[in-house]
Image (cartoon, rainbow, N blue to C red; front, top):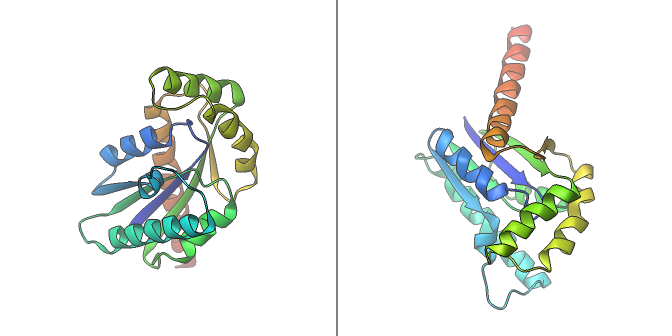
Length: 180
């Protein structure tokens, strides 16, 4: 059975780094960063571009899910609203797939610190701090597994993601054994 990890969190929380780490650690893995489907200049957020990006993401994810070369599909994106997660899942062929929807959580102080490091490196612009901090509370309301990333390394966070999926597989196996 394939495994799909949908990993969300505010800009700067470490989604890409965690997803890249997971790609190296999990069997036959492929990673899609949702931002790659929206790398445009000028960057425009309209109803048309939002539909296009969701369609691109779902098309690529379904191709990965249907490809026999990959056992594990990892997707990382902001996903700050349940409707975004649902819109993606509704368009995916996940019948033979375990799905783990995970939100990487962070407090304001740590997020600002991480974003300031990115700004110093020229990776982001200063306006990202306010937009990202503003979205932190939105993740509390999502139907996702929450992982606290404060004061943790990328490796520690990736291991926590892996342990969640192992624990869930064990729980499902125990339920099957009880039914037998």
